[in-house]
Image (cartoon, rainbow, N blue to C red; front, side):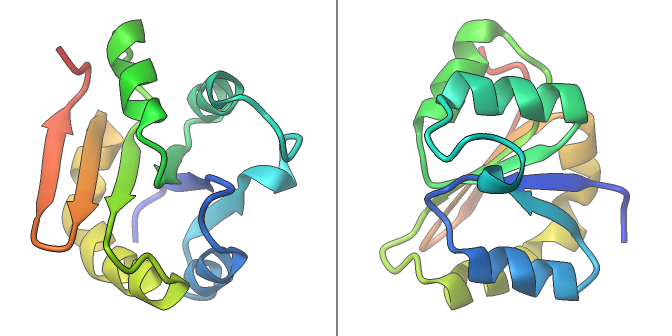
Length: 124
């Protein structure tokens, strides 16, 4: 396991956080460190300062990364037709070992029903 640290957006279930913690991942939910109504820009800045990968379903984070020209934080965005906690947790457990090095270098990962897309940061 790598030393990656994660920050899960409020649009994902606390069950996902708990399940990943039980598998040894360093993962927090936004509500544990910021107000529940924190702006996306505040979440992004916290993740940058604390070197945490953001996990979300919110497309705004990709836009913020692109507009800011940021190399960090890395981002995982889910675009699933059935985004239930079990499916998201299973996808993360399957994919994280394979993409950990790329996340450590700075990338934006989009996971949909059919594929996984990885783009190096900054997004141009």
